[in-house]
Length: 507
Image 1 (spheres, rainbow, N blue to C red):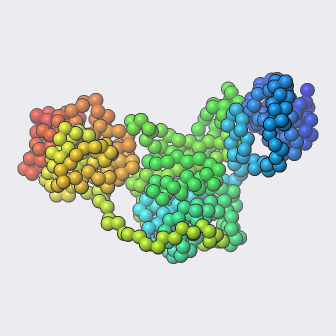
Image 2: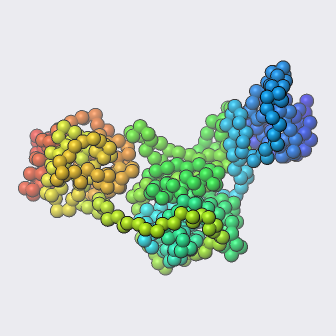
Image 3: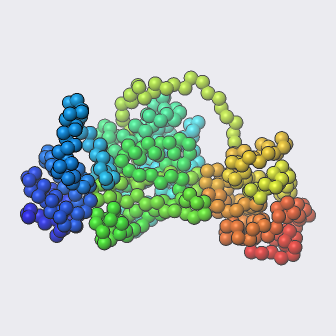
């Protein structure tokens, strides 16, 4: 029996005890004792890791693998010697460990993590609105963090581009405590490789003393990216570089502790572990009817930091800018490889501005309920829009992805730029009229902040009824013309609904 009995220790305790053992034979004996006892995958991983650290072999048995029958092993060796030419042993990169169990790339263990970082995307020399929205939410989260935990951690904006120092200063006005920027004329437009390398370099605290002495931790605790085309691209690459995870397309965030009993996270069955300061990242799930909360929790022997996500534009309100607000602006120092810029943009076309559905008093949104006569349905929606002083027409993703045939005079209204929802625009009008819309969560994300929601649907079990203020049971082809007449006649919204519903409003 080895000096350390693995059965007397949790995996976390055993991992600490292993740091005191340098003798390979003792470690092998401990490994055999673990196999004969609780035989925990994570415990065997820890012993194998210590064997590797002291430069010893594990007698040919990999972490998590079942020991082979001796005769089979000898047979396999013989076949290998006979059939395979001798090759020079490849250098172990620390990543290639094919085993029965997943063997993760090990992140920084026992590191120091702090602050919430926000990638501030820019375009045309300005901060995108989603950047200011994320800064506002980050400010709220970290103020609550200080109240809850008593730790003053910062909101850190990070950005890159050409002549972007002014935008770094602007991010302070929108809630950041620190703004780290990298200025280079070659970064005028988003480029995958340099943006990924620079962002990862910033997050790891690499660079000159002048550009890094403001921080004393290994990686950010949290990091937010915009769920834009560029932001989605960058978030996946940077989080991979930082050896962590990512929740994409989130619409709500909060920080609190979380107790789990999953042995993959605790290290052994039957043990509960409380993780503190966990960023809860909410997003619509793949069913389209529920929200999922994504957590980025540590595994035994590794830490998933920063906890990161991409945020759907329009999910949060930006704070009012305070241009007298104090903050630290830091210029990042890093040598950029010329090879990162081997792709050069020599010519480009400027697209026309898309349709902005935000800021209107009324939004009329059409869904798959127009399927019986798509052109007529679109016409009815536009007529209702015209009846209001300030209204606009939106559509659901179901129309964008459908094969409906529209006549030419309304065809342009069925394009993606009018889509409302998770992958479209987020609106918050005074009145939202949803006609023939089922109410999937992805759509709810785009209109949930509307003051008054009126739904028109033949299906009384449609999900949208659950979050509507008024539900009109009826065919939109019959209801919309009567709503239009009522609005044009100057009747109130409630009277219009009562007319459409035959005198009774169903809420």
